[in-house]
Image 1 (cartoon, rainbow, N blue to C red):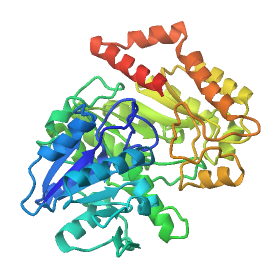
Image 2 (cartoon, helix red, strand yellow; image 1 turned 90 degrees about the horizontal axis):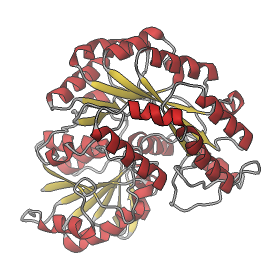
Image 3 (cartoon, rainbow, N blue to C red; image 1 turned 180 degrees about the horizontal axis):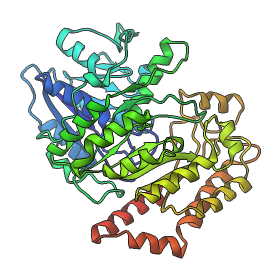
Image 4 (cartoon, rainbow, N blue to C red; image 1 turned 60 degrees about the vertical axis):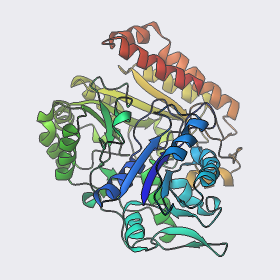
Amino acid sequence: MKITFLEPPPLGKKTPERFAGCSYELYHFPDLANLYPFSYLYEEGFDVNYIDASLERLDEKGFLNRIKDSPETSSGGDYYVIHSVILSKKTDLYYLKKIQEIRPLSKIIFHGPEPTRVAEEYLINKNILVFRGEIEKNLISYLKEGKFIGVSYLNNGRAVHEPPPERPVNLNELPFPFRNHHVLQPYIKNYFNPKFRKVPHTIMMTSRGCAFRCLFCVPNSISFARELEYMRYNNGKKPPVQIASAKRVIEEFNAIKMQGFHSVMIVDDQFLWGRERSLEICRGIKGLEMEWGCLSRADFLTDEEVVKAMAEAGCVSVDIGVENLNQEVLNYIQKDLKVEDVYTSVSLLKKYGIEPKLNIMFGTSPYDTSRDIKDTVERLKTLDVKNIMFSIATPFKGTKFYNFCKEKSYLIDETDEINPLGKSIISYPSLSKKELEGLERYAYRSFYLRPKMIMARIKTYHGLRDFLNDIRVAINLFKH
């Protein structure tokens, strides 16, 4: 059999970002949620293929022609795998029917947070399987032994939901994503991230899940899928965080270097799990001369020895989920963070030449006011920071924040048409939908369209490519 992993083209002008799973793309990077099972199957000897319509610039006709023209096994019993998130669900269900018209004997496998949450919406006929939660080992068990573990399917028109495995995936037991497989080679040159100068670029993951309790939070798609599945069978309790050993992280960095990549973004919801592990990783990758970045809480960046070690190991960028500079708001949303830690972390990162990117979110609390948000924007201007992303708090289906907003009648749009960069689906007594959307636009204009910021941005360019990449990201951002 052949197993082909698919990223279909968008139905509209905006491309859903599938790995983070919570926004539309500003730039395209590899989808690790597909690369893990792709690589696992390849290592087990399966015939695997990959079609990324966005990177191949395929429209609907071109995408379907690729499927039609690809060789079919003699039995016709091939598999197509689609990683689906809420923003891509409409697209994926549309192409599901189109693919079945071309390959009626093949099976289509869905996985990701949205199929995990509402498997029935994907199970439109018997040739569809939904792998809930973490797909890797369950997919191997099914293809090699016919076992249904954590799988949903139709039996005589009725949805059957087989229970998940007894324990979550251990990251140390998974093969590294085979990022330079021959079918992925055409894509490599098109991956980019404006935070990094060195190319080719890729991403990696060293942990799954988050141990913190932020009210508004929705993690990346892999973590969210495992979280939704675990909570369903464990009385709403979050799953334990799975953290790869420092040894494995160092080995994966070396593998990425050997595969020909020169920069990497670590996309864990939180990378710096423990001081000694962080220092061991930094010591282990120090000589690789790789550019890298990560996501981290501010309070994990107040240790100067850790920040210095990160810089010496090649770290050039850190994304920090700040959300707000009002301590009362942070307390309300259970961020468990002190505002002064934000200032300390930014100061240390700048001291050692690491560029911080701050993520600010409006509307996380019903007690937020227009004055509070404008005050946060003005305070951000006092920081020596060039990169800030402003977004509107969005209650994702399946989260406690969604249930809270719905119960309080703050939720005004229950469709799947969400977009934290530009659209509010909540409206508070103190902040209406219109006000939240206007404040987000105000924040971008007020922060970025200052002569100081424009000149600082220009000074970071090392050539025409940097300028063009910046323009490309800016266009996508303001389009959303």
